[in-house]
Amino acid sequence: MIINVTGVTVENNPAPCTEGLRFQIQFECLPPGVQEDIEWKLVYMGSPENNEYDQVLEVVDVGPIQIGRNTFTFQSPPPDLTQIPISDLVELTALLLICSYKNREFIRVGYYVRNTFNDLPLGEDGNPIYPTEIDPSKMTRYILADEPRVTRIHIPWDNDEAIAPTLTDAERELLAELPKDDVEIDVCGDDAELIASGYYNDEDDEEEEEEGEEDPNVVVDIVEDE
Image: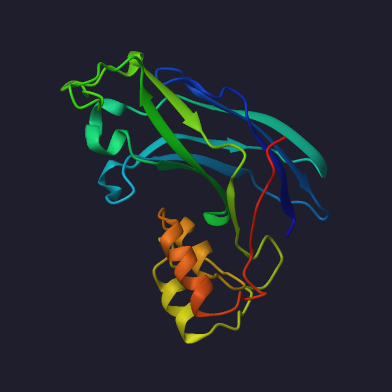
């Protein structure tokens, strides 16, 4: 892989929900380098059940890319929480930081996110009373920065030929569900596909662990937040 992301740090966390997001990103570019810019995109998943509420917060092109180590700060506006049902606001959702080269996605970093209301009154039963209208200025955003989920996808770069993966039938079915049909991938396991498609839950993960052994070719790893 010519572009290797070596670290992602969430700089403002926790933060008010009205505050933008900032990530410090470190990556290295190996010889022979790349001829074009790389694209970074930040997507906020408004609901774990319905992609209708997904919001693309920012898209930036970074380049020209120098061979060696590179660092930059990615900034985006906050999501518009008024467009998301209150029931989904208090559920665990996610941010997806996606990097592509020539429209080919080669890495996704996913973070779980939880939004909380500040100083909610309690009802007689002791449960919080949620407002009928959303005021983001009275909410706090928590990003679980210590537990990122990373999916790496092998792609052809400038002079590489397309990679011909060897996939099982189950992996081919998962690959067919990826949002971009032209992605060239080594092997995409169940966890990788769930993150790539924007959804992941622990029950699916536990079920897969019970059904079979881990595939050694799945390119999914964890990046520690520095």
